[in-house]
Length: 377
Ligand SMILES: Cc1ncc(COP(=O)(O)O)c(C=O)c1O
Image (cartoon, rainbow, N blue to C red; front, top):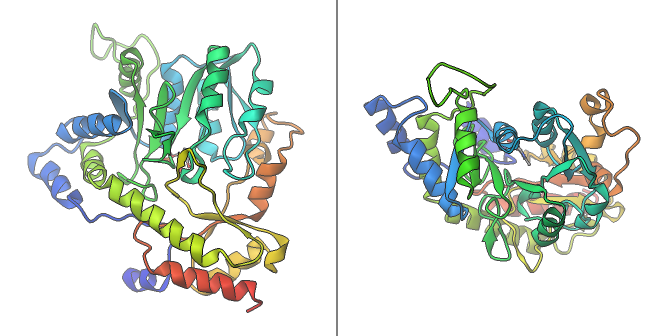
């Protein structure tokens, strides 16, 4: 039944588990290493970190906890401010709030949809401790100006690369560009562990601190003695086994995403009123979500288009609702009266089209449906 339903719908995103995932998980089961110790954890951490150009990787339960752990490991807390884009997923602001720090927002670049770096410096105050660039939908942020501002004001750069595994900025993989990089391995990500996350860094002290905090912060002198507040953010060996198998195919999986994007780009090029994603000259966009923005010339609204695609068995998602429009944050007195026109427009007009690595020829069905709707069908 589920199989039939799946075949009739083109999902917005589904994982592709066609490598050693099952064999490695079976190995965990056969050898009884099913909890958070075991060879797959270590191998996944070291190989994924190395893939990002980093010496250390610390696995976590998900991308949200990776962000929280990263911030906690560098001592971000009450009275501190962290600057991030309003156009992102709530996990970023939540992670900042968990530490007791205050999120400070900037608007987006209208083309890449990432943090508008020209607005960054104006948001820095004596309380600012970190910048959190988020590589939205797989396109890297313009990191050089971010690193310049960070260096000028002695700030940490904590990259949120949850959506951008294997994306590159000027030939360097994201996640390994700031002092810390955070990843999610949720099932729709370029590589997955089901649920999971990782912090990567080149700083041995940060890695050691993250490792202690994620495992309840046992005192180094005496296990079960706690002199500070830690968390249980441990990933299981079973999840890491899936992650390692996925990592073995990461280049192929991200290339598949790029191939989908290039087919979308050529098939949608002639459709009026539809703005396509960009790839800056310095970027390798991995198109985690192939996303478009619907302008008036399209002839139907974004919501209309989504409804009509749903009728045709094509799943989509609206783009993010910006952080300054989230009731949960406004109720806490955050972002009162703030307006960010680019993020607001993206939120009203943008949508994610089916983006699975294994999408293949289904791109044609999606594009003909869009073409028909644009033509008034
Ligand atoms: C930009 C961004 N940051 C963080 C997260 C949180 O990751 P997770 O869902 O694994 O907690 C996500 C999730 O999709 C995300 O898109």
